[in-house]
Length: 163
Ligand code: PNS
Image (cartoon, rainbow, N blue to C red):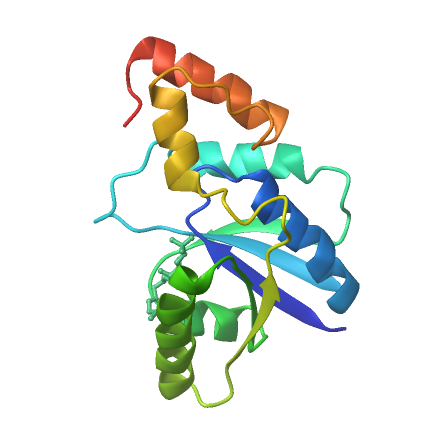
């Protein structure tokens, strides 16, 4: 069985991420959507909230597992018995960061590899950061994120704990 890890912050997951999962499922038998725990990065949604949101959004996909990990991605991949990672690539600006990360990971583990899927034209401008920002200022993000995210963003922003 060919499985791959789709790692990220997913704070929050967007329709762009969901499209990558759907396309990734054509390449792999199973995908593990893995939320990186990063205590140094301030997040809007807790890891537990993100896990719940992603599980809800991907409920219909039996071949998807949602998990969270600490530490290095290469170590997590080893623990999960795969060396394949899936990432979406949006625009030129993503390239340098992704190129460095893929090569750093391969330096740490020569068996490691990253498969990139080019983000489609409907999603190339969507980022979690912009979604958070637009929602914080009361903008409508319902066409950019799954319904569960939109609902929770409105609740968070009402409570005033948005970024
Ligand atoms: O959604 P993001 O924030 O672009 O995802 C980045 C992520 C989580 C994939 C990356 O930061 C990561 O793999 N973090 C785990 C720690 C690690 O392995 N760092 C070395 C990679 S160069």
